Image (cartoon, rainbow, N blue to C red; front, side):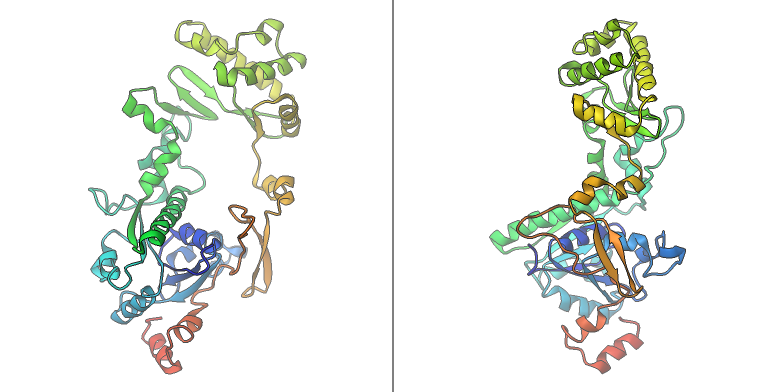
Length: 413
C-alpha cells in the first residue's frame, strides 16, 4: 500500500513502532541511527542474555521492515547528507527534544523548502509547545501524567507502574495513523505538513470514559486490585479458578443484567446459590446501590458466591460454559498460552523471520492486521547496525569507495 514511499525514521524508543507500522504497510523505511547504533539497541532483554546492539529483543520487536544506516547528524557533513535524503523522502519521523532538530537546521521549517510534500512527524512526551514541552520523560512519567496509572495497583497504597511499557506505543500508533491522514491530504493537495504527536495526549485515551468524569463532575474510577472502584462500589473484574484466573463482567442494568442472570442460573445449577439469589432482578439491582444501604453488603455477598463457583472450575471449563450459555467470561492467558493459542495458529498469525547475523530463524508475532488485497509481509528482519550503509551511500547517493571510507574515518557514518 505504501510501496512507492520512503520513510526516514530518526526516532528513539519513543517512536520506533510508528516507522514499523509504515514499513509493514510497504514503505521503504530507512532507520537513521547515530554511529554505533540507536540507544534503543541497548534496551534489554537480550537474546541469550548477551548484551549486544544486534541482540536486543526490544529492538527486534519494533524494527522489522526497516533498513539501517548510520549517520552523525551533529556534524555539518551528516546534516548535508540528511538533507539529500530528505529531498526524495515522503515521511520524516523524529522524537528528539522539541526544538533540538530546529537548532541544527533540521526542523520542519528548514526541511519543507527542500521538499514541500514532506510529512514531518514529531513525537514527543508533551508536544512541541506548552510549559511542559521540554520536561524529561519515561514510560512511567507518561502514564502517570496521562491518567491510566491512577487505576493501576491496590487501593490501600500508591499506584504502581503498568508492567508492560506502553506509553510510547500509544503515541507511536497514533503517530502512524496521523502520518497516514497527512498523507491522504498530500494526495489531494500535493502539500506535506508537520504532524505534532504528544505521548501524554495519546496515552490519555487509555483512561477510556474516565477522562470525561472530572470535567463532567461525575464519579471517577479509582484503583482496586482486580477491578475498579466507582463511588461506593468495588467492581470486581478478576476471579480465581483452579488453574489461574478469568475476567467476568459481573454487572447489572439493561445492558449487562441479562448476562448476569444467565451466569447466576449456572451458579445455581452447580449448587452455589439458592433460588432467591438466582432470581434477583438483575436489571434493576444496580439502581439499589443509591437507595438501599443493604445493597452494597449484598453485592459483596454475591461476589463471594461467584468466587466460590469459579474456584470449582478451570479456565477452559468456564470459557466453554460462556460459549454455550452466552456469558461475559474470558480466561486470563499467560504468555505461554498465547504462544500456543489455537486461534492464532488457525489464523496463521505467527511468522518466521530469519536472522542471518545469528544463522537462525525465530518465530515472530504476525502482522497487526490482515489485508486481502495487499497482505503485510516481513520483507526485512530488524537490521543490524548500519547494515545498509553501502547500499544507500554508494548505491543510492552515489558516493565513491574513497568518499565512503573518508566518511567512516571521520565518524560521520
